[in-house]
Image 1 (cartoon, rainbow, N blue to C red):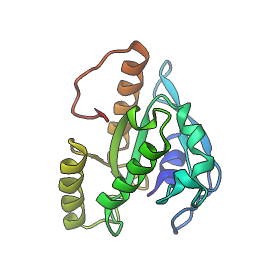
Image 2 (image 1 turned 60 degrees about the horizontal axis):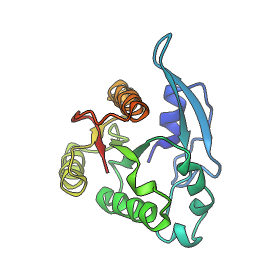
Image 3 (image 1 turned 180 degrees about the horizontal axis):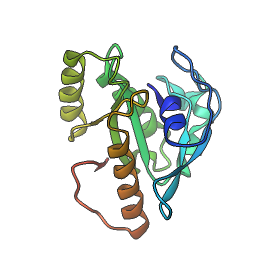
Image 4 (image 1 turned 120 degrees about the vertical axis):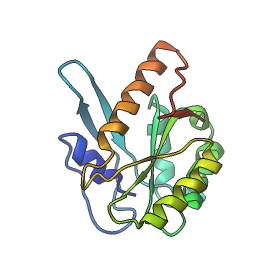
Length: 175
């Protein structure tokens, strides 16, 4: 879904990046510095497959790391076979795992926009809008498209979760 590419593009972290799914085998952390005073830690967690909460794949070992995160940035591969199904699977695994993961504030973004066709982007955007109740942000970490908007949304979401405020902003949603 481009998680490692995104982390490498926005921080000094150097995760393994390859052109095949499930490259990330261990959580990777990077500090995102937006300016002289605003920064946050971004974690790249290995992808989840169906049944991860029951031990399938390696994702269940890392769901505990997600518990410590204040918010989730959920990247969905815009060029993937079925972006909506991928989102459903991960949301289902978060809910099945429990521990409050399904209630964490979330930003939903379509990634790898540079390799998706306009038709794929339009279809995925509409499906995710219906499924999630909000339009996803669109980005390409490889080209920089939409990256700043996603980082701004992350900062806004983290600031609001620290203050306990619910700030209505179309760039993010609470699940």
